[in-house]
Amino acid sequence: MNTVWTPSSWKEHPAAQQPDWPDHDRLDSALKTLSAYPPLVFAGEARSLQAQLGQVAAGNAFLLQAGDCAESFEEFSADSIREKLRVILQMAVVMTYSMGVPVVKVGRIAGQFAKPRSSPTERVGDLELPSFRGHIVNDQGPFAEARVPDPNRLVQAYHQSSSTLNLLRAFTKGGFADLSRVHAWNQEFVAGSPEGRRYDQLASEIDRAMRFMRACSVDTESNPNLREVDVYTSHEALILGYEEALTRQDTLTNQWYDCSAHMLWIGDRTHQIDGAHVEFLRGVGNPIGCKIGPTTPVAEVLELCERLNPSRVPGRLTLVSRMGADAVTDKLRPILRAVTDAGHPVVWACDPMHGNTYTAPNGRKTRHFDVILQEIAGFVAAHRAENTWPGGIHVELTGANVTECLGGADALSDTDLDSRYETICDPRLNGRQSLDLAFRLAELVTAATA
Ligand code: TRP
Ligand code: MN
Image (cartoon, rainbow, N blue to C red; front, side, top):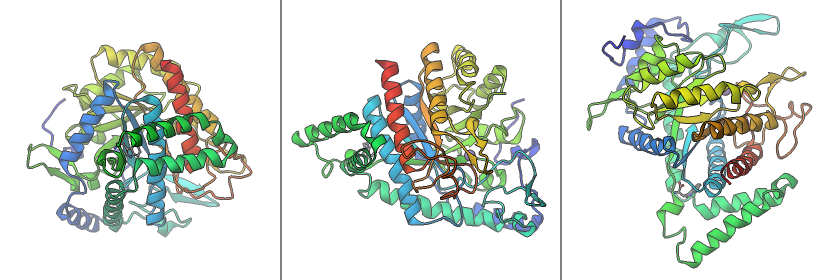
């Protein structure tokens, strides 16, 4: 069923999870505005990312994909962008050192606004309201007017993505990512908490390596490689009108790229093989991801690989498994085997968050640090057993000191959840939990290869 692809051919396919826009003239005018705006990313950057992901697929690099569950129009500030980037860089240093391979850094950032929902309505107090679908669509306020989809939000999402990306580019190229500075932040973490001290040895090893380099005149001031990083952007390509409006033909290659982000992914709820999301993403040149949940049959995973990457280009397709800690090893192994046997060079990434969410007694959605870690351990074990490369992790985090996930460096318990529960969607790891996770992952992967 490979008919001709165009940026709008998705409209011939059933599109799950699309908002019910009340006013089609206003929608059309917002989409028209967006299609006249400049692209947010350049196709050449998407190609560089794809080449780096090709290295991940080959087992020579690791993917760290991280950021908010849903970005918020209200919590939009230089501080929150900087703190999120800081955590990602701190994790990346630990992972680069312990794994001994480059870490490809991709944010769930500068466009991660839309949320798929399990039901079109939700109960809030005594009211049955249309579900909150992310700030690119509606508002989470507990009353009916807030929930009406507003096309102006598409334009606002573009502008917020644009300034977020601008600041990311400034930070990543302007000195903020200096390796010695990021390492110093990690030393503060290690010195500043009882959990952190467990990583004393690893941190001092990195310290010695840094001093050795400096002694050999390889210093971060004069070496751009040690001062600058590439941090790419990604989000779930859910609202297809928005993605289509930012899809442009690259003048160098004539290929179409979705220029709303470097990488786009398809969620576990929208990867129907003949659905609109698969149709749209199969035609763009960006590297793409697809979430795979525990109910996806192996045969369907193979069909998705075939449809999304028929030429088997390494780095084009990342499969992000989100199985749940108990199921991961058993569910993943047959998939690893089948995809490998079919000759598909995918990046294998582990989303240890979404299969492990539950509601605490006080009604807050949460996840436990130990269970998140357990899914990663199961993921690594499955890859060891099948002799494939556990290529990356995909996590929801924030730099802020929130109390949304349990456990971790500060041993948060469910009575702590209320004190700083700020997410507008799923619970995120806070800065210290995220760094703790990077150190644990380092231990896991080092043990697996020892
Ligand atoms: N440029 C290299 C990289 O991105 C090294 C590097 C510099 C780095 N600053 C960093 C790595 C901060 C991780 C975090 O890998
Ligand atoms: Mn989420």
